[in-house]
Structures are given as C-alpha cells and as structure tokens.
Length: 101
Image (cartoon, rainbow, N blue to C red):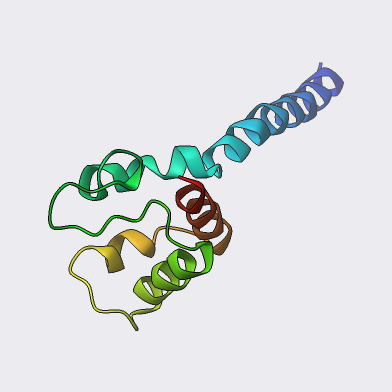
C-alpha cells in the first residue's frame, strides 16, 4: 500500500506542475497584464481624461517609467504601488504591448 502512495504523489505533483506552467505563461503576456492599466489610462492605453495616453509610446520609455515607479525614482500617487507588483519581464511585456498600440 505504501509503495502506491509515493508514486501517486509524485505523479500528482508532476501533473500539477504541467497544468500551472501554461497558465503562468499566459499571465505574463502583455495583453493580459495591460488590463490593469485600462481603468486609468483608457481602453488600449488611449486616455480620454487627465491620465496620460500610453498607447504608441516607445517601448523603452514605458519600461523606464514603470521601473522608475517601481523603484521610487518617479513621483506618483498610485503607480508606485501598481508597478511594484510587476516583475521586470512583466514590465517588458506591458511596454511592448502599449508600444504596438
């Protein structure tokens, strides 16, 4: 009985790892991550209000700003808190997404 429990646990862990891999990859896509930005910066980053439009800005500009917010070198009210939640890879994906829009 014990010999069955250990292999089943190993199979379960392996299958769980396979199932979470693609979901994590999807979460790192710029299109998914950019949804965080739409409520303030407008649909697809095209603001109609006081927030800056970020669609069409250079990828390097967007990444630099987000990293600045994250590190605290850029002044902000909300962006510092938001940017801290992104990895550098996620920031790159967001910057790429908005640069293409």
